[in-house]
View 1 (tube, rainbow, N blue to C red):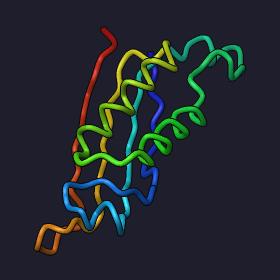
View 2 (view 1 turned 60 degrees about the vertical axis):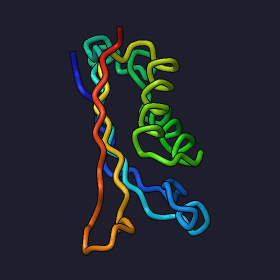
View 3 (view 1 turned 30 degrees about the vertical axis):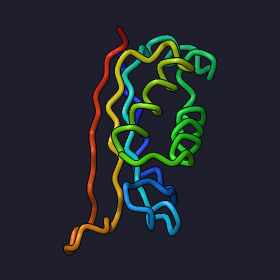
View 4 (view 1 turned 90 degrees about the vertical axis):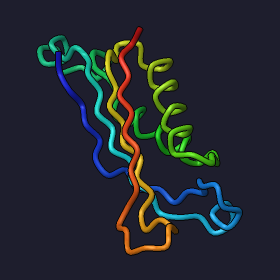
Length: 119
């Protein structure tokens, strides 16, 4: 078993419950960690024997581009697509952070974390 991590994938997206958030957008950061069997790719040195992190990044960016009211919802979509498009992934740990959230205080970010195992 092995781990692939994509840290601090930055997007400008339009998530949130406030109408203004859908109009002006905000900065987001996504951290993704997947578990998969890396033994074959360790020996073969072949991209076909591993999970392509270019695909993982593409899924995150595309799903972050679709407006959601809740970070939980966009996080769920990211996880569902990864399990659908990368069948060799057995576990996903995902963090989606809204930077400088409009919550009436000096808060650097708000983050949701989801962990899912392939069923």
